[in-house]
Amino acid sequence: MSRKTYEPKEAPTLSPEVRVDQPREASKAERVEIDRPSFKDWMDLRLGWYGFVRKNLDEPMPPGVGWWQTLGNLLMTLLIFQFVTGFALAMFYTPSAEGAHASVKHITYEVGAGTFVRGLHVWGSTVIVIVTALHLLRVFFWGSYKKPRELTWIVGVIIFQIILGFSFTGYLLPWDQKAYWATVVGTRIAATIPVVGHMMLVLIRGGEEVGALTLTRFFSLHVMLLPASLLVVAGLHMFLVRKHHIAGPVVPQKGKPVPFYPDQLFKDAIVLVVGVGLLVYLAVGLPPSLEAIADPTGTDFSPRPEWYFLGLYELLKIMPTGFEVVATAIIPGLITIGMFALPWLDRSKSRHPGKRQWVIMMGMAVILLIGLLTLKGLLDTPPEHKKAPTNVEAMR
Amino acid sequence: MPHNEEQDAEALMSRRKMMGVVVGVINLGLIAVVGLPVAEFVTSPLQTKRKKVWVELMPDDQIAPGEVKEVNFSMKIVDGYHETERKYTVYVRRDEAGVMAIDPACTHLGCRVRYQTDKHRFVCPCHGGVFNDDGTNKSGPPPKPLERHPVKVENGKIWVEREV
Image (cartoon, rainbow over all chains, first blue to last red; front, top):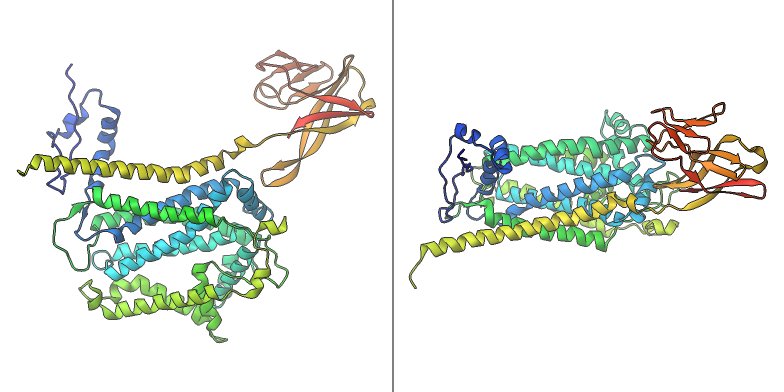
């Protein structure tokens, strides 16, 4: 019996200078009838795998696309890292007011590689926020959110919100002083909203006060709802990115599109090395700490949120009495609405920053506001904070 | 030098291949950076060292030769992140040779065997394994005798040694 060979269907390659030997294309009926196909061919006939890989590797990159377009890939990789380390941490973590602190202590100081695994997860959140901000700013300044990529932008803003949700809920889980007090203050923000504020506070906390039910609520959001939502919207985001392709530089450059592989993928890989390198450096150099167990008594602890919420925290501090809602809901709300509405606020046809000055000015003003307030927060360390034990060694 | 298109194409292909290899190596490195520590982390129970501890069971004079008694006791153990009291059961048996402590876990699949005083035998409720009163397997699926723990009699008390 003669054995027909199966050759995968080649997607048209974009770079004519790269010669890929084009085999004769077998008809679908012919291909399915092949005797004893190899495992790879058998799978391909059912999944269309070769075509999928080839299509993605040959994704056209407009000329001028380069290092700035590597951030999405880095972000995706860092999120996968969070998922893997988070799954491992959840094996040892106990989401209860009695067990949480002890289990995080056990993870950090007793389980093999625990300090590093937790360090990757803790510092991962910081690096992810930085990379998300850079990714978002790149899209903002390049005007890449314009038609037909409005939905890609909106889904991206949702991803950004989910990432902040991860940070806020994850911060409580170690159940130490820092976690507890940051959550007490952070959730109080909801209470400043007129009319529904108190109801929201109770819903967020799972009760009037931050306690055992807040912890289980945050844990459930952190490991169930948020990852599931992220998976769906991140998948949609990537589908849209591939569907509408990457927006090139604001002023189209001369030249033909080049395939994603190898040049852009290579740049992606280099940026991954730098980004993950930074993460590992932080995880090793500044291992995660654990303060004393959450203690609702005592007045000597100065609550401080994670650094990327410091801007909001400082904004609240400078607001005059009675106007808290401006800092807690109105300004953040307007910024969020502005982000979602950006593709419609910016109606200019051109993506060039010079041709959409007021949007750029507004964006710069927001960035400056957040930047300055964050800086103020970073420099303004309350002296009492230093008295609090910095890590678990102090309590041993 | 004459321009050779074939050579150009070949150079391009090898560059493509080269970059592919570098990307592959980087990806493997990234997988290792997160995969190896996570593997060590989740497999850390394999590294846990158990230690042997002596526990007091009962007064020596409360068990007569030929008797088998079920004794419950508890031990302080470290269970992951917390220290706790864990309860155990052991069968204490005395014969002419002395005292022995028989573990109630059936050697087939670990169900707890019950002692039948009238028939002087242990019976497993799960798959009908039967053991003699000294713990040796008599019939049914159990492949070997019930485990015995080291015992000692000191100052009129029976002690058993257990791994925790």
